[in-house]
Length: 375
Length: 262
Image 1 (tube, rainbow over the protein chains, first blue to last red):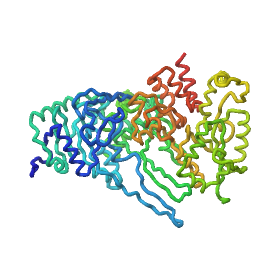
Image 2 (tube, each protein chain N blue to C red):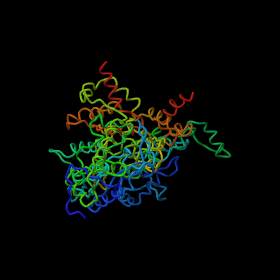
Image 3 (cartoon, one colour):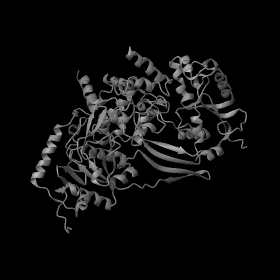
Image 4 (cartoon, rainbow over the protein chains, first blue to last red):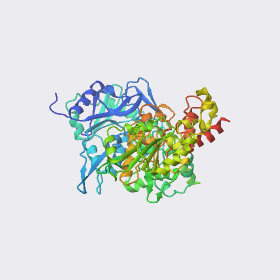
Protein backbone atom coordinates (compact mmCIF):
# COMPACT_ATOMS: atom_id res chain seq x y z
CA UNK A 1 0.00 0.00 0.00
CA UNK A 2 2.63 2.51 1.11
CA UNK A 3 6.13 2.17 -0.13
CA UNK A 4 7.54 4.66 2.26
CA UNK A 5 6.49 5.07 5.85
CA UNK A 6 6.89 8.74 6.55
CA UNK A 7 6.35 8.72 10.31
CA UNK A 8 9.44 8.52 12.49
CA UNK A 9 10.08 7.43 16.06
CA UNK A 10 8.50 9.86 18.55
CA UNK A 11 5.86 11.03 16.12
CA UNK A 12 2.21 10.43 16.89
CA UNK A 13 -0.22 8.95 14.41
CA UNK A 14 -3.96 8.37 14.42
CA UNK A 15 -5.55 4.98 13.75
CA UNK A 16 -9.30 4.72 13.35
CA UNK A 17 -10.70 2.33 15.95
CA UNK A 18 -12.27 0.16 13.28
CA UNK A 19 -8.76 -0.43 11.93
CA UNK A 20 -7.24 -1.64 15.22
CA UNK A 21 -7.78 -5.23 14.18
CA UNK A 22 -5.31 -4.63 11.34
CA UNK A 23 -2.67 -3.82 13.94
CA UNK A 24 -3.51 -6.98 15.90
CA UNK A 25 -3.40 -9.01 12.72
CA UNK A 26 -0.04 -7.57 11.80
CA UNK A 27 1.36 -8.57 15.18
CA UNK A 28 -0.04 -12.08 14.80
CA UNK A 29 1.48 -12.35 11.33
CA UNK A 30 4.84 -11.33 12.77
CA UNK A 31 4.55 -14.33 15.10
CA UNK A 32 3.57 -12.60 18.30
CA UNK A 33 1.25 -14.16 20.82
CA UNK A 34 -0.97 -11.17 21.45
CA UNK A 35 -2.16 -10.81 25.04
CA UNK A 36 -4.15 -8.17 26.83
CA UNK A 37 -7.02 -7.51 29.23
CA UNK A 38 -10.17 -9.53 28.63
CA UNK A 39 -13.27 -10.50 30.54
CA UNK A 40 -13.44 -14.23 31.29
CA UNK A 41 -15.98 -15.75 33.66
CA UNK A 42 -17.09 -12.27 34.72
CA UNK A 43 -13.63 -11.32 35.85
CA UNK A 44 -10.77 -9.39 34.34
CA UNK A 45 -7.67 -11.32 33.32
CA UNK A 46 -4.79 -11.02 30.94
CA UNK A 47 -5.12 -13.52 28.13
CA UNK A 48 -5.01 -14.06 24.42
CA UNK A 49 -6.45 -11.28 22.26
CA UNK A 50 -7.51 -12.43 18.80
CA UNK A 51 -9.52 -9.42 17.73
CA UNK A 52 -10.44 -6.15 19.39
CA UNK A 53 -13.77 -7.71 20.38
CA UNK A 54 -11.80 -9.62 23.01
CA UNK A 55 -10.87 -6.35 24.74
CA UNK A 56 -13.03 -5.22 27.70
CA UNK A 57 -14.99 -2.59 25.80
CA UNK A 58 -17.64 -0.91 27.91
CA UNK A 59 -16.25 -2.03 31.24
CA UNK A 60 -14.86 -0.11 34.18
CA UNK A 61 -13.46 -1.40 37.44
CA UNK A 62 -14.39 0.02 40.81
CA UNK A 63 -11.59 -0.57 43.26
CA UNK A 64 -11.41 0.05 46.97
CA UNK A 65 -9.39 -1.48 49.78
CA UNK A 66 -10.23 -5.19 49.74
CA UNK A 67 -12.85 -4.94 47.00
CA UNK A 68 -12.78 -5.18 43.21
CA UNK A 69 -15.87 -4.77 41.08
CA UNK A 70 -16.00 -5.20 37.33
CA UNK A 71 -18.87 -3.11 36.01
CA UNK A 72 -20.30 -3.01 32.50
CA UNK A 73 -21.46 0.51 31.75
CA UNK A 74 -21.66 0.07 28.00
CA UNK A 75 -19.37 3.01 27.18
CA UNK A 76 -17.48 2.94 23.88
CA UNK A 77 -13.92 2.74 25.25
CA UNK A 78 -11.72 -0.35 25.05
CA UNK A 79 -9.07 0.64 27.59
CA UNK A 80 -11.03 2.36 30.34
CA UNK A 81 -10.94 -0.51 32.79
CA UNK A 82 -8.12 -0.41 35.31
CA UNK A 83 -6.52 -3.88 35.50
CA UNK A 84 -7.38 -6.53 38.04
CA UNK A 85 -5.25 -8.90 40.07
CA UNK A 86 -3.18 -10.15 37.17
CA UNK A 87 -0.23 -8.29 35.72
CA UNK A 88 2.27 -8.76 32.89
CA UNK A 89 4.55 -10.36 35.46
CA UNK A 90 2.84 -13.68 34.76
CA UNK A 91 4.23 -13.67 31.21
CA UNK A 92 7.75 -12.38 31.85
CA UNK A 93 8.26 -14.11 35.20
CA UNK A 94 5.81 -17.02 35.08
CA UNK A 95 4.52 -18.44 38.33
CA UNK A 96 6.01 -21.83 37.48
CA UNK A 97 9.05 -22.54 35.31
CA UNK A 98 10.85 -25.84 34.94
CA UNK A 99 14.57 -25.22 35.36
CA UNK A 100 16.24 -28.59 34.88
CA UNK A 101 16.09 -32.33 35.35
CA UNK A 102 18.63 -34.47 37.13
CA UNK A 103 19.09 -38.09 36.19
CA UNK A 104 21.18 -40.51 38.16
CA UNK A 105 23.35 -42.40 35.74
CA UNK A 106 25.92 -44.99 36.87
CA UNK A 107 26.53 -43.28 40.17
CA UNK A 108 26.68 -39.72 38.91
CA UNK A 109 24.11 -37.08 38.13
CA UNK A 110 23.41 -35.79 34.62
CA UNK A 111 21.95 -32.30 34.44
CA UNK A 112 19.53 -31.60 31.62
CA UNK A 113 18.69 -27.93 31.46
CA UNK A 114 15.16 -27.22 30.32
CA UNK A 115 15.01 -25.69 26.88
CA UNK A 116 12.96 -22.54 27.02
CA UNK A 117 10.19 -22.34 24.46
CA UNK A 118 8.67 -19.04 25.38
CA UNK A 119 6.48 -17.36 22.78
CA UNK A 120 7.24 -13.80 21.74
CA UNK A 121 4.49 -11.82 23.44
CA UNK A 122 2.84 -8.64 22.30
CA UNK A 123 1.33 -6.88 25.32
CA UNK A 124 -1.73 -4.76 24.50
CA UNK A 125 -2.50 -2.03 27.01
CA UNK A 126 0.45 -1.71 29.39
CA UNK A 127 -0.26 1.14 31.79
CA UNK A 128 2.34 3.55 33.09
CA UNK A 129 2.47 1.86 36.49
CA UNK A 130 2.84 -1.53 34.78
CA UNK A 131 5.54 -0.37 32.40
CA UNK A 132 7.46 1.03 35.38
CA UNK A 133 7.00 -2.32 37.12
CA UNK A 134 8.49 -4.17 34.15
CA UNK A 135 11.45 -1.78 34.21
CA UNK A 136 11.89 -2.45 37.93
CA UNK A 137 11.87 -6.22 37.38
CA UNK A 138 14.42 -5.70 34.60
CA UNK A 139 16.79 -4.40 37.26
CA UNK A 140 16.31 -7.53 39.34
CA UNK A 141 16.56 -10.08 36.54
CA UNK A 142 18.84 -8.53 33.91
CA UNK A 143 21.96 -7.43 35.73
CA UNK A 144 25.65 -7.20 35.05
CA UNK A 145 26.51 -9.75 37.71
CA UNK A 146 23.61 -12.09 37.03
CA UNK A 147 21.01 -12.41 34.33
CA UNK A 148 18.03 -14.69 34.49
CA UNK A 149 17.89 -16.37 31.07
CA UNK A 150 14.17 -17.22 31.34
CA UNK A 151 13.20 -13.63 32.09
CA UNK A 152 15.62 -12.15 29.62
CA UNK A 153 14.37 -14.23 26.72
CA UNK A 154 10.76 -13.28 27.35
CA UNK A 155 11.53 -9.65 28.00
CA UNK A 156 13.72 -9.02 25.01
CA UNK A 157 11.26 -10.61 22.60
CA UNK A 158 8.21 -8.79 23.97
CA UNK A 159 6.45 -6.08 21.97
CA UNK A 160 4.84 -3.48 24.20
CA UNK A 161 1.84 -1.33 23.41
CA UNK A 162 1.49 0.99 26.37
CA UNK A 163 -1.68 2.90 27.08
CA UNK A 164 -2.12 6.30 28.58
CA UNK A 165 -4.48 5.91 31.47
CA UNK A 166 -7.48 8.20 31.41
CA UNK A 167 -9.68 6.64 34.05
CA UNK A 168 -7.68 5.76 37.22
CA UNK A 169 -9.34 3.71 39.94
CA UNK A 170 -9.92 4.31 43.64
CA UNK A 171 -6.74 2.59 44.76
CA UNK A 172 -4.45 4.15 42.14
CA UNK A 173 -1.58 6.43 43.15
CA UNK A 174 0.78 6.32 40.18
CA UNK A 175 0.86 10.13 40.07
CA UNK A 176 2.50 10.06 43.54
CA UNK A 177 5.09 7.53 42.39
CA UNK A 178 5.81 9.39 39.15
CA UNK A 179 5.00 6.41 36.94
CA UNK A 180 1.74 7.54 35.32
CA UNK A 181 -0.95 8.07 34.23
CA UNK A 182 1.00 9.26 31.20
CA UNK A 183 3.55 7.04 29.49
CA UNK A 184 6.49 8.98 28.06
CA UNK A 185 8.72 6.22 26.73
CA UNK A 186 9.81 2.62 27.20
CA UNK A 187 7.23 0.99 24.91
CA UNK A 188 7.16 0.24 21.20
CA UNK A 189 3.87 2.08 20.80
CA UNK A 190 2.07 4.36 23.25
CA UNK A 191 -1.65 4.45 22.76
CA UNK A 192 -4.14 7.11 23.78
CA UNK A 193 -7.78 6.27 23.35
CA UNK A 194 -10.22 8.93 22.20
CA UNK A 195 -13.84 8.44 21.21
CA UNK A 196 -13.37 7.24 17.62
CA UNK A 197 -9.66 7.05 17.20
CA UNK A 198 -6.51 5.66 18.79
CA UNK A 199 -3.50 7.93 18.88
CA UNK A 200 -0.26 5.98 18.66
CA UNK A 201 3.04 7.53 19.62
CA UNK A 202 5.84 5.58 17.98
CA UNK A 203 8.27 4.55 20.69
CA UNK A 204 10.77 2.42 18.80
CA UNK A 205 11.97 1.45 15.36
CA UNK A 206 10.19 -1.87 15.88
CA UNK A 207 6.96 -0.03 16.62
CA UNK A 208 7.45 1.99 13.47
CA UNK A 209 7.90 -1.17 11.41
CA UNK A 210 4.74 -2.70 12.81
CA UNK A 211 2.71 0.36 11.81
CA UNK A 212 4.18 0.43 8.33
CA UNK A 213 1.45 -0.45 5.87
CA UNK A 214 -1.44 0.27 8.24
CA UNK A 215 -3.90 3.07 7.41
CA UNK A 216 -2.52 5.63 9.88
CA UNK A 217 -2.61 9.37 9.51
CA UNK A 218 -0.77 12.20 11.14
CA UNK A 219 -2.50 13.11 14.41
CA UNK A 220 -4.16 16.50 14.12
CA UNK A 221 -3.56 19.26 16.66
CA UNK A 222 -7.21 18.91 17.65
CA UNK A 223 -6.78 15.24 18.54
CA UNK A 224 -3.51 15.86 20.38
CA UNK A 225 -5.18 18.55 22.47
CA UNK A 226 -8.09 16.29 23.26
CA UNK A 227 -5.65 13.59 24.44
CA UNK A 228 -3.81 16.13 26.55
CA UNK A 229 -7.01 17.23 28.26
CA UNK A 230 -7.95 13.63 29.11
CA UNK A 231 -4.58 12.98 30.71
CA UNK A 232 -4.71 16.15 32.78
CA UNK A 233 -8.10 15.09 34.06
CA UNK A 234 -6.79 11.60 34.83
CA UNK A 235 -4.12 12.85 37.22
CA UNK A 236 -6.86 14.45 39.28
CA UNK A 237 -8.89 11.20 39.45
CA UNK A 238 -6.31 9.24 41.49
CA UNK A 239 -8.03 7.64 44.44
CA UNK A 240 -4.93 7.62 46.67
CA UNK A 241 -1.76 9.61 47.26
CA UNK A 242 1.53 8.67 48.86
CA UNK A 243 4.15 11.09 50.13
CA UNK A 244 7.55 9.72 49.05
CA UNK A 245 9.65 12.57 50.33
CA UNK A 246 11.36 10.89 53.29
CA UNK A 247 11.56 7.40 51.78
CA UNK A 248 13.49 5.18 52.30
CA UNK A 249 14.74 6.76 55.58
CA UNK A 250 11.28 6.85 57.17
CA UNK A 251 11.16 3.05 57.11
CA UNK A 252 14.77 2.11 57.60
CA UNK A 253 15.25 4.39 60.62
CA UNK A 254 12.02 3.37 62.34
CA UNK A 255 12.02 -0.39 62.30
CA UNK A 256 11.01 -0.46 65.96
CA UNK A 257 8.13 1.98 65.70
CA UNK A 258 5.06 0.92 67.66
CA UNK A 259 2.91 1.20 64.55
CA UNK A 260 4.27 -2.03 63.08
CA UNK A 261 2.65 -4.02 65.87
CA UNK A 262 -0.79 -2.74 64.91
CA UNK A 263 -0.72 -4.72 61.69
CA UNK A 264 -0.84 -7.97 63.67
CA UNK A 265 -4.57 -7.75 64.24
CA UNK A 266 -5.43 -7.32 60.57
CA UNK A 267 -2.77 -8.87 58.33
CA UNK A 268 -3.61 -12.46 57.34
CA UNK A 269 -0.06 -13.18 56.17
CA UNK A 270 -1.80 -14.69 53.14
CA UNK A 271 0.74 -13.30 50.63
CA UNK A 272 -1.91 -11.86 48.27
CA UNK A 273 -0.24 -8.41 48.23
CA UNK A 274 3.09 -9.83 47.09
CA UNK A 275 1.54 -12.08 44.47
CA UNK A 276 -0.49 -9.35 42.78
CA UNK A 277 2.39 -6.86 43.08
CA UNK A 278 3.87 -6.41 39.59
CA UNK A 279 7.37 -5.84 40.99
CA UNK A 280 7.59 -8.56 43.68
CA UNK A 281 9.98 -11.17 42.34
CA UNK A 282 10.61 -13.66 45.15
CA UNK A 283 10.65 -17.30 44.21
CA UNK A 284 11.30 -20.70 45.63
CA UNK A 285 12.69 -23.78 43.97
CA UNK A 286 10.76 -27.00 44.35
CA UNK A 287 12.14 -30.43 43.56
CA UNK A 288 9.93 -33.31 42.49
CA UNK A 289 11.65 -36.64 42.81
CA UNK A 290 10.77 -40.02 41.38
CA UNK A 291 9.98 -42.75 43.92
CA UNK A 292 13.26 -44.55 43.33
CA UNK A 293 15.23 -41.32 43.70
CA UNK A 294 16.94 -41.48 40.31
CA UNK A 295 15.13 -38.58 38.65
CA UNK A 296 14.49 -35.11 39.97
CA UNK A 297 12.80 -32.17 38.34
CA UNK A 298 13.44 -28.67 39.67
CA UNK A 299 10.90 -25.93 39.18
CA UNK A 300 10.93 -22.28 40.12
CA UNK A 301 7.66 -21.07 41.61
CA UNK A 302 6.41 -17.74 42.94
CA UNK A 303 7.06 -17.36 46.62
CA UNK A 304 6.43 -14.64 49.17
CA UNK A 305 8.07 -13.09 52.21
CA UNK A 306 4.69 -13.70 53.91
CA UNK A 307 5.17 -17.45 53.65
CA UNK A 308 6.53 -18.57 57.06
CA UNK A 309 8.72 -21.07 55.22
CA UNK A 310 10.33 -18.28 53.21
CA UNK A 311 12.37 -16.96 56.12
CA UNK A 312 13.06 -20.33 57.68
CA UNK A 313 16.76 -20.93 58.10
CA UNK A 314 18.70 -23.58 59.94
CA UNK A 315 17.50 -23.38 63.49
CA UNK A 316 14.39 -21.31 63.05
CA UNK A 317 12.40 -18.56 61.41
CA UNK A 318 13.97 -15.12 61.29
CA UNK A 319 10.55 -13.49 60.92
CA UNK A 320 8.26 -15.49 63.15
CA UNK A 321 5.52 -12.89 63.65
CA UNK A 322 3.06 -11.49 61.14
CA UNK A 323 4.16 -7.91 61.75
CA UNK A 324 7.80 -8.83 61.21
CA UNK A 325 6.89 -10.22 57.82
CA UNK A 326 4.77 -7.20 56.93
CA UNK A 327 7.58 -4.90 58.00
CA UNK A 328 10.01 -6.87 55.85
CA UNK A 329 7.79 -6.45 52.82
CA UNK A 330 7.12 -2.75 53.27
CA UNK A 331 10.67 -1.83 54.25
CA UNK A 332 11.94 -3.67 51.20
CA UNK A 333 9.44 -2.12 48.83
CA UNK A 334 9.92 1.45 50.09
CA UNK A 335 13.36 1.13 51.64
CA UNK A 336 16.08 -1.34 50.89
CA UNK A 337 14.81 -1.71 47.32
CA UNK A 338 16.20 1.76 46.68
CA UNK A 339 19.54 0.72 48.13
CA UNK A 340 19.60 -2.39 45.92
CA UNK A 341 18.23 -1.08 42.66
CA UNK A 342 18.27 2.72 42.87
CA UNK A 343 14.48 2.93 42.73
CA UNK A 344 11.57 2.29 45.05
CA UNK A 345 9.84 -1.05 44.49
CA UNK A 346 6.35 0.46 44.22
CA UNK A 347 4.79 1.99 41.12
CA UNK A 348 1.46 3.03 42.64
CA UNK A 349 -0.71 0.52 40.77
CA UNK A 350 -2.79 -0.07 43.92
CA UNK A 351 -3.14 -3.85 43.46
CA UNK A 352 -1.93 -4.67 46.98
CA UNK A 353 -4.64 -2.38 48.40
CA UNK A 354 -7.46 -3.72 46.25
CA UNK A 355 -6.54 -7.40 46.57
CA UNK A 356 -5.78 -7.49 50.30
CA UNK A 357 -8.76 -9.40 51.76
CA UNK A 358 -8.26 -7.35 54.94
CA UNK A 359 -8.14 -4.10 52.98
CA UNK A 360 -4.76 -3.03 54.36
CA UNK A 361 -3.72 0.13 52.53
CA UNK A 362 0.01 0.80 52.14
CA UNK A 363 -0.61 4.49 51.60
CA UNK A 364 -2.38 4.63 54.97
CA UNK A 365 0.26 2.50 56.67
CA UNK A 366 3.10 4.75 55.47
CA UNK A 367 1.13 7.84 56.50
CA UNK A 368 0.42 6.38 59.96
CA UNK A 369 4.06 5.51 60.47
CA UNK A 370 5.07 9.02 59.46
CA UNK A 371 2.56 10.46 61.92
CA UNK A 372 3.94 8.37 64.77
CA UNK A 373 7.54 9.29 63.95
CA UNK A 374 6.75 13.01 63.79
CA UNK A 375 5.23 12.99 67.28
CA UNK B 1 10.17 -60.80 48.74
CA UNK B 2 12.85 -58.16 48.56
CA UNK B 3 13.84 -57.64 52.20
CA UNK B 4 15.10 -54.12 51.55
CA UNK B 5 11.70 -52.88 50.46
CA UNK B 6 9.98 -51.00 53.27
CA UNK B 7 6.62 -52.49 54.23
CA UNK B 8 3.51 -50.35 54.31
CA UNK B 9 0.22 -50.98 56.08
CA UNK B 10 -2.87 -48.90 55.38
CA UNK B 11 -5.59 -48.77 58.03
CA UNK B 12 -9.07 -47.39 58.12
CA UNK B 13 -10.74 -45.91 61.21
CA UNK B 14 -13.88 -43.73 61.15
CA UNK B 15 -13.84 -42.29 57.67
CA UNK B 16 -15.40 -42.38 54.23
CA UNK B 17 -12.50 -44.28 52.56
CA UNK B 18 -11.87 -41.33 50.24
CA UNK B 19 -8.24 -40.94 51.28
CA UNK B 20 -7.54 -44.64 50.77
CA UNK B 21 -9.15 -44.22 47.36
CA UNK B 22 -6.75 -41.38 46.60
CA UNK B 23 -3.98 -43.92 47.13
CA UNK B 24 -5.65 -46.30 44.71
CA UNK B 25 -6.38 -43.47 42.29
CA UNK B 26 -2.67 -43.00 41.66
CA UNK B 27 -3.08 -44.94 38.45
CA UNK B 28 0.07 -43.69 36.78
CA UNK B 29 2.25 -44.19 39.83
CA UNK B 30 0.77 -47.30 41.42
CA UNK B 31 3.03 -49.75 39.63
CA UNK B 32 6.13 -47.76 40.56
CA UNK B 33 4.85 -47.60 44.11
CA UNK B 34 4.30 -51.35 44.25
CA UNK B 35 7.85 -51.70 42.95
CA UNK B 36 9.33 -49.42 45.61
CA UNK B 37 7.43 -50.61 48.67
CA UNK B 38 5.94 -53.79 49.99
CA UNK B 39 2.23 -53.19 50.46
CA UNK B 40 1.75 -55.64 53.30
CA UNK B 41 -1.66 -54.68 54.61
CA UNK B 42 -4.24 -52.68 52.68
CA UNK B 43 -7.67 -54.25 52.91
CA UNK B 44 -9.29 -51.71 50.63
CA UNK B 45 -6.94 -52.90 47.89
CA UNK B 46 -6.38 -56.59 48.60
CA UNK B 47 -7.48 -59.35 50.97
CA UNK B 48 -3.92 -60.66 51.05
CA UNK B 49 -2.60 -59.31 54.33
CA UNK B 50 0.62 -60.04 56.14
CA UNK B 51 0.97 -59.56 59.88
CA UNK B 52 3.13 -56.74 61.30
CA UNK B 53 5.41 -55.20 62.32
CA UNK B 54 5.54 -52.73 59.43
CA UNK B 55 7.91 -49.93 58.52
CA UNK B 56 5.18 -47.44 57.71
CA UNK B 57 1.57 -47.34 58.90
CA UNK B 58 -0.78 -45.01 57.04
CA UNK B 59 -3.91 -44.33 59.05
CA UNK B 60 -7.12 -42.97 57.61
CA UNK B 61 -10.01 -41.90 59.82
CA UNK B 62 -10.67 -40.55 63.27
CA UNK B 63 -11.20 -42.23 66.62
CA UNK B 64 -14.90 -42.50 67.41
CA UNK B 65 -15.35 -45.79 69.34
CA UNK B 66 -13.83 -47.55 72.35
CA UNK B 67 -12.72 -50.29 70.03
CA UNK B 68 -10.79 -47.78 67.88
CA UNK B 69 -9.07 -46.36 70.96
CA UNK B 70 -7.58 -49.80 71.58
CA UNK B 71 -6.93 -50.65 67.94
CA UNK B 72 -4.90 -47.48 67.23
CA UNK B 73 -2.54 -48.46 70.06
CA UNK B 74 -1.90 -51.77 68.31
CA UNK B 75 -1.29 -49.97 65.02
CA UNK B 76 1.23 -47.71 66.74
CA UNK B 77 2.92 -50.66 68.40
CA UNK B 78 3.27 -52.45 65.06
CA UNK B 79 4.75 -49.54 63.07
CA UNK B 80 8.05 -47.71 63.00
CA UNK B 81 6.53 -44.65 61.34
CA UNK B 82 2.88 -43.64 61.66
CA UNK B 83 1.33 -41.24 59.18
CA UNK B 84 -2.10 -39.76 59.81
CA UNK B 85 -3.73 -39.46 56.40
CA UNK B 86 -6.47 -36.96 55.73
CA UNK B 87 -8.49 -34.55 57.80
CA UNK B 88 -10.40 -37.22 59.76
CA UNK B 89 -7.09 -38.57 61.02
CA UNK B 90 -5.54 -35.16 61.60
CA UNK B 91 -8.45 -33.26 63.15
CA UNK B 92 -11.47 -35.53 63.56
CA UNK B 93 -13.15 -34.86 60.24
CA UNK B 94 -16.73 -33.91 59.52
CA UNK B 95 -17.89 -36.48 62.10
CA UNK B 96 -16.37 -34.18 64.75
CA UNK B 97 -19.42 -31.94 64.28
CA UNK B 98 -20.88 -33.95 67.15
CA UNK B 99 -18.15 -32.57 69.40
CA UNK B 100 -19.97 -29.24 69.31
CA UNK B 101 -23.51 -30.56 69.61
CA UNK B 102 -25.58 -33.09 71.55
CA UNK B 103 -24.48 -36.37 69.98
CA UNK B 104 -27.62 -38.12 71.23
CA UNK B 105 -29.81 -35.77 69.23
CA UNK B 106 -27.73 -36.45 66.12
CA UNK B 107 -27.91 -40.21 66.63
CA UNK B 108 -31.66 -40.22 67.17
CA UNK B 109 -32.22 -38.23 63.97
CA UNK B 110 -30.39 -40.82 61.89
CA UNK B 111 -31.11 -44.15 63.59
CA UNK B 112 -34.39 -45.57 64.69
CA UNK B 113 -32.71 -47.48 67.50
CA UNK B 114 -29.70 -45.42 68.60
CA UNK B 115 -29.48 -47.57 71.73
CA UNK B 116 -27.72 -50.23 69.62
CA UNK B 117 -24.88 -47.83 68.71
CA UNK B 118 -21.56 -48.02 70.48
CA UNK B 119 -19.63 -44.84 69.98
CA UNK B 120 -17.75 -42.14 71.82
CA UNK B 121 -19.36 -38.72 72.31
CA UNK B 122 -16.48 -37.12 70.39
CA UNK B 123 -14.51 -37.74 67.21
CA UNK B 124 -10.82 -37.10 67.76
CA UNK B 125 -7.63 -37.08 65.69
CA UNK B 126 -5.11 -39.91 65.85
CA UNK B 127 -2.53 -37.68 67.55
CA UNK B 128 -4.79 -37.39 70.61
CA UNK B 129 -4.35 -41.10 71.21
CA UNK B 130 -0.89 -42.11 70.01
CA UNK B 131 2.28 -40.42 68.79
CA UNK B 132 2.01 -39.47 65.11
CA UNK B 133 5.14 -38.95 63.04
CA UNK B 134 3.60 -37.04 60.17
CA UNK B 135 0.19 -35.53 59.45
CA UNK B 136 -1.11 -35.06 55.94
CA UNK B 137 -4.27 -32.97 55.77
CA UNK B 138 -6.99 -32.88 53.17
CA UNK B 139 -10.48 -34.11 52.47
CA UNK B 140 -9.42 -36.02 50.57
CA UNK B 141 -5.63 -35.81 50.59
CA UNK B 142 -3.80 -34.67 47.48
CA UNK B 143 -2.18 -37.56 45.69
CA UNK B 144 0.92 -35.54 44.82
CA UNK B 145 1.45 -34.86 48.51
CA UNK B 146 1.00 -38.54 49.31
CA UNK B 147 3.64 -39.41 46.73
CA UNK B 148 5.91 -36.70 48.10
CA UNK B 149 5.87 -38.09 51.65
CA UNK B 150 6.42 -41.66 50.48
CA UNK B 151 9.23 -40.54 48.16
CA UNK B 152 10.80 -38.51 50.97
CA UNK B 153 10.64 -41.49 53.34
CA UNK B 154 12.13 -43.83 50.76
CA UNK B 155 14.95 -41.41 50.05
CA UNK B 156 15.59 -40.47 53.65
CA UNK B 157 14.84 -36.77 53.36
CA UNK B 158 12.34 -34.34 54.81
CA UNK B 159 9.07 -34.13 52.87
CA UNK B 160 8.52 -30.89 51.04
CA UNK B 161 5.12 -29.74 52.30
CA UNK B 162 3.92 -26.14 51.99
CA UNK B 163 3.58 -23.87 55.00
CA UNK B 164 1.70 -21.14 53.16
CA UNK B 165 -2.00 -20.58 52.63
CA UNK B 166 -4.24 -21.50 49.70
CA UNK B 167 -3.94 -17.88 48.43
CA UNK B 168 -0.47 -18.54 47.06
CA UNK B 169 -1.77 -21.54 45.10
CA UNK B 170 -4.58 -19.40 43.65
CA UNK B 171 -2.11 -16.79 42.50
CA UNK B 172 0.28 -19.33 41.00
CA UNK B 173 -2.55 -20.84 38.99
CA UNK B 174 -3.88 -17.46 37.82
CA UNK B 175 -7.11 -17.78 39.80
CA UNK B 176 -8.56 -14.38 40.64
CA UNK B 177 -9.45 -13.99 44.33
CA UNK B 178 -13.12 -14.97 44.72
CA UNK B 179 -13.36 -13.12 48.04
CA UNK B 180 -12.16 -9.74 46.74
CA UNK B 181 -13.57 -10.06 43.21
CA UNK B 182 -16.94 -11.67 43.90
CA UNK B 183 -17.41 -11.26 47.63
CA UNK B 184 -17.62 -15.04 48.07
CA UNK B 185 -16.68 -16.09 51.64
CA UNK B 186 -13.42 -18.03 51.37
CA UNK B 187 -11.32 -19.77 54.02
CA UNK B 188 -8.27 -19.73 51.75
CA UNK B 189 -6.26 -17.06 53.58
CA UNK B 190 -6.26 -19.18 56.76
CA UNK B 191 -6.10 -22.61 55.17
CA UNK B 192 -3.04 -24.74 54.52
CA UNK B 193 -2.10 -25.07 50.85
CA UNK B 194 -1.84 -28.48 49.25
CA UNK B 195 -4.99 -29.05 47.24
CA UNK B 196 -3.97 -26.76 44.36
CA UNK B 197 -6.81 -24.37 45.20
CA UNK B 198 -9.47 -26.60 43.68
CA UNK B 199 -12.53 -24.74 44.97
CA UNK B 200 -11.53 -21.13 44.18
CA UNK B 201 -10.36 -22.18 40.71
CA UNK B 202 -13.92 -23.43 40.17
CA UNK B 203 -15.46 -20.19 41.40
CA UNK B 204 -16.19 -21.32 44.95
CA UNK B 205 -14.79 -20.25 48.27
CA UNK B 206 -12.31 -22.55 50.04
CA UNK B 207 -13.97 -24.44 52.87
CA UNK B 208 -10.80 -25.17 54.77
CA UNK B 209 -10.54 -28.92 54.35
CA UNK B 210 -6.72 -28.83 54.51
CA UNK B 211 -6.89 -27.32 57.99
CA UNK B 212 -5.38 -24.14 59.42
CA UNK B 213 -2.23 -22.76 57.78
CA UNK B 214 0.79 -22.17 59.98
CA UNK B 215 1.09 -18.74 61.50
CA UNK B 216 -2.24 -17.60 60.15
CA UNK B 217 -4.51 -14.90 61.51
CA UNK B 218 -7.86 -16.58 62.02
CA UNK B 219 -9.37 -13.70 64.03
CA UNK B 220 -8.83 -11.28 61.17
CA UNK B 221 -10.38 -13.71 58.70
CA UNK B 222 -13.43 -14.16 60.94
CA UNK B 223 -13.93 -10.41 60.89
CA UNK B 224 -13.59 -10.27 57.08
CA UNK B 225 -15.91 -13.24 56.50
CA UNK B 226 -18.59 -11.88 58.77
CA UNK B 227 -18.72 -8.78 56.58
CA UNK B 228 -19.01 -10.98 53.49
CA UNK B 229 -21.76 -13.26 54.83
CA UNK B 230 -24.52 -14.08 52.36
CA UNK B 231 -26.70 -15.68 55.02
CA UNK B 232 -26.70 -15.47 58.81
CA UNK B 233 -24.27 -17.85 60.48
CA UNK B 234 -22.31 -18.57 57.30
CA UNK B 235 -18.95 -17.79 58.91
CA UNK B 236 -19.59 -20.05 61.87
CA UNK B 237 -20.58 -22.86 59.53
CA UNK B 238 -17.39 -22.41 57.52
CA UNK B 239 -15.21 -22.70 60.61
CA UNK B 240 -17.32 -25.58 61.87
CA UNK B 241 -16.78 -27.56 58.68
CA UNK B 242 -14.53 -30.42 57.66
CA UNK B 243 -11.62 -29.13 59.79
CA UNK B 244 -13.88 -27.74 62.52
CA UNK B 245 -12.15 -29.67 65.29
CA UNK B 246 -8.73 -28.20 64.42
CA UNK B 247 -7.81 -26.03 67.42
CA UNK B 248 -7.35 -22.78 65.43
CA UNK B 249 -10.72 -23.09 63.68
CA UNK B 250 -12.43 -24.32 66.82
CA UNK B 251 -11.23 -21.33 68.80
CA UNK B 252 -12.37 -18.99 66.06
CA UNK B 253 -15.82 -20.54 65.98
CA UNK B 254 -16.22 -20.69 69.74
CA UNK B 255 -14.73 -17.56 71.24
CA UNK B 256 -15.03 -14.99 68.52
CA UNK B 257 -18.34 -15.87 66.95
CA UNK B 258 -20.31 -16.83 70.04
CA UNK B 259 -19.07 -13.68 71.78
CA UNK B 260 -20.46 -11.56 68.97
CA UNK B 261 -23.78 -13.37 69.07
CA UNK B 262 -24.45 -12.43 72.66
